[in-house]
Length: 120
Image 1 (cartoon, rainbow, N blue to C red):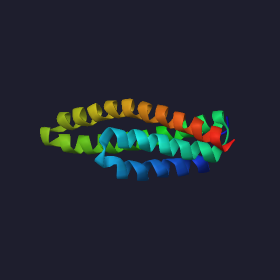
Image 2: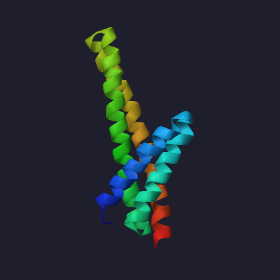
Image 3: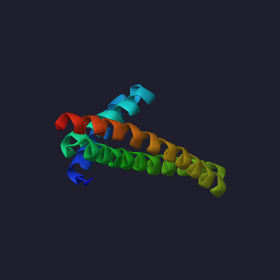
Image 4: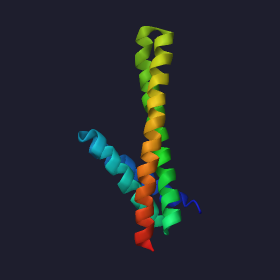
């Protein structure tokens, strides 16, 4: 399995765009973003194994970026409860973000495998 960083980057950007548009459908929009972005990464990488791998990486990166952003915002909002509130707010959001990262990675890998299969 080779990592095609161009495919990963384009898949990541597709996930961000589709995810932003999909905010009106909270869960469906995010799952769709992972599948579509993973599909694009997999299609560009080519092959089922490479497609799944590159889709997985693109989904993981998007999940990590969103988790760090959400944890930062949660920590800043939690500061209203003092330093401990900020820490607990950020840490709680970050733990939820880890779970979301795994979910984004799984559906992106599935989309990547399908994209890689179609690309040949």
